[in-house]
Image (cartoon, rainbow, N blue to C red):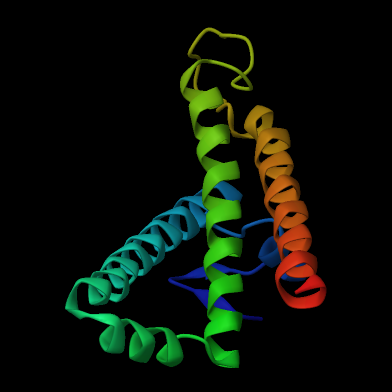
Length: 145
């Protein structure tokens, strides 16, 4: 039996799919931060490539030739998929901060119940919306063009 820091893994695969020790929300938090940093990196690279326009027509043509390959097309899709997830999860976070999906307030009696179970449907909805946008983006970017 697998042991992590002295705790037995009693949940098996179900614990891995459901978030394990951390929970789904912790993984969403980590993925939200990573996609945000990735989008920031893309934004900065986009500014550098676009700024080559100021260096003349030749520099612009070289920059566009550099970023027009097949690898960059896949990268462009990954940026779109990251944006789709980041936007859907951001809307989920705004709704949670506004009090939607946190459940009714209860008296804080030990053992404390959390609102994570009430938020789970919002998290699944955000993942579904992000996945639907990513699939639509794949069809548009990789199939229809």
